[in-house]
Image 1 (cartoon, helix red, strand yellow):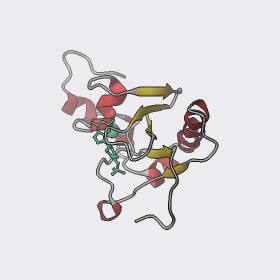
Image 2: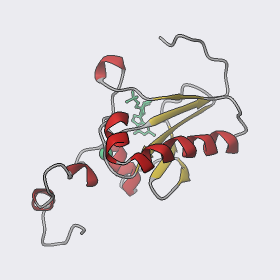
Image 3: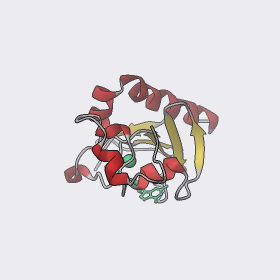
Length: 137
Ligand code: 5GP
Ligand code: ZN
């Protein structure tokens, strides 16, 4: 079911059964718009369920965000709602790391504003290409 020309986004969303809202794009979600191609992203890898694009403010020589095509607010909601897509984020990140020549890389999910999540569409950070310290800041 898609958005028809006579159907407003609000009507479409109202037609989605309760609990299934995450299966549609959020109106003002930055990463939904990148997935939809409505705003540009430097896309480096795509799979059936994921899209990977370079972070606009890279923190390492490779800093790629891997996101599910469908909107989920965070990693745990994605894992509960679509475990296949959740696994695909990790395998996609590994494929990007390998394609860029890295055996060693860091994967990060921020969940909640208190630890730095700023975009509330699940995204797996892939960081590689420089030494990294532990614990993180
Ligand atoms: P968070 O802080 O939520 O874990 O990560 C959000 C990430 O999205 C940040 O690393 C930030 O640099 C990146 N980001 C924010 N806006 C954009 C954008 O418009 N395009 C891209 N490619 N990355 C963005
Ligand atoms: Zn979204």
